[in-house]
Amino acid sequence: MSLAISRAPMPVNEPVRSYAPNTRERASLQARLQQMSAETIEIPLCIGGKDVRTGKLGRAVMPHRHAHTIAQFHQAGTHEVQQAIDAAVAAQHDWARLPWEARAAVFLKAADLLAGPWRDTLNTATMMGQSKTCHQAEIDSACELIDFLRFNVSFYEQLLREQPRSSSGMWNRVEHRPLEGFVFAVSPFNFTAIAGNLPSSAALCGNTVVWKPASTAVYSAHFIMRLFREAGLPDGVINLVTGSGGEVGDPVLESRHLAGIHFTGSTRVFHQMWRKVGDNIDKYVSYPRLVGETGGKDFILAHRSADADALVAAIVRGAFEYQGQKCSAASRAYIPSNLWPQAKDRLVAAVEGIRMGDVADFSNFMGAVIDANSFRTQANAIEEAKSAADASILVGGGCDDTEGYFVRPTIIQTTNPSYRTMCDELFGPVLTVHVYDENQWSETLDVVDRTSSYALTGAIFAQERYAIEQGLERLRNAAGNFYINDKPTGAVVGQQPFGGGRASGTNDKAGSILNLLRWISPRTIKETFAPPHDYRYPFMG
Ligand code: NAD
Image (cartoon, rainbow, N blue to C red; front, side, top):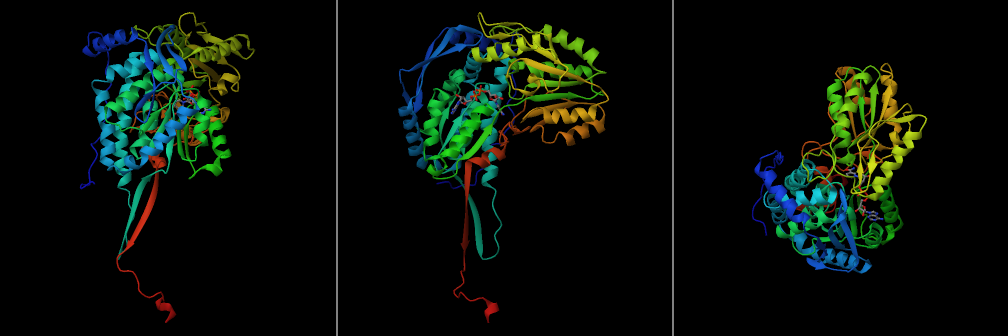
């Protein structure tokens, strides 16, 4: 019973630590790195609050040193998936009936634990398992996840306060009920914050969850689960099942209790899941909510009035930080002919100067790509460009997977704005540049809009206000997150709600109240204080 109308604590974005030389935070993180790198752990599933071991083991490695095993993880089969569904369904009654403040307190506590004693552990796990530099880990697994946890509580309170008017003689209320059934959270490898947010945002709203992380990110997922448990998450509210996508996914999508999917990953996988839900539609208790944030082919478009230095800095950061493996990473750029001579030289110099290697060496700007599959995708695209008539390698192009899956930051230059790598998502450190006639700005806006099926992020660089306004208008549907004179990456929770349209997703804006709306099913209650005692209306008199 709640005897108060509580207010959520006012969230502020978690400050980013610098890890500069001679800081305490750097020493502490390096010590934790050393300690965790020396261990190989075993990762069980977590079902109904219990560790479950199946004996069917997968191997988690460091992408930058793939011979180094950091964990053996147990993989679920159909039996464990069913157990996880049963545990989620069984936990729903009690979890949904807790006062909202009690559920919120679990996640606020998790945020505080992560901001404090857990910070080094989750940052280290993300560095080791996903090959992020300390800065990339800090802005993801520490700051962004803390922000998701704190801001979502505040958004949830805002949502609960959303109530209808009442005319005289009645009281209208809306209850923001959780969905009837469980939510299936399926997370990608590239952001620890997304992995933590997909199950926790739905759980905050009173839902219970079966959570399947990417096999290449089980290491950090394991620590997220431990963090939630330490924060007091009750048994069965979030059930962690690791394993192959289809083996876990297919039986989950068959369950009549499936109430929603909270997915982030590739467009291909989301299409598959959507199709299966369609095939199973007669089986479900309710229409499952389908929320998917998917692929991108994010652009940077420069106008002839653009500031060339700002453009070059944005391209380098936007395309190559975290090896181009951010869904928002710039992977196609359109540069006007008047700026190209100076931009080209600066770009080549900057990209040649990028240090890449083991992320435990803090002087590196980049680590390795996630796995052998991604390595092959990048290497193939680079080889293709080397022999293409309408493309060439401007800088980079080196690939070496002897020790880790290393791909040098690469810029392909093409004369063909429809060249394959201007259209297809590679999800790696490969940017394709097309130089256009500076007098063809208007035509180029059409090209940018039409080239790819995706519409996630995009940036325009221009000093002329008319050009900026034209870009905003003509590219209205080309990106869900649009940047003016800034790189297209680095969205901050509570500041730039994130998500895209077209083939990039359902655009349900993670890190905003709009996302939480998908995890509730409102019930409207009308109470009449003095009901009429006669069915006849005055006009009948
Ligand atoms: P992925 O699609 O390969 O995998 C995502 C998740 O789906 C993983 O957990 C995977 O195991 C699971 N999966 C695979 N097949 C499945 C099936 N049949 N049933 C159920 N689950 C299944 O994506 P990834 O390689 O982990 O991540 C990279 C992709 O994610 C890129 O396309 C990127 O653009 C996208 N992404 C998008 C956003 C966004 O906000 N739009 C954010 C991050 C990543």
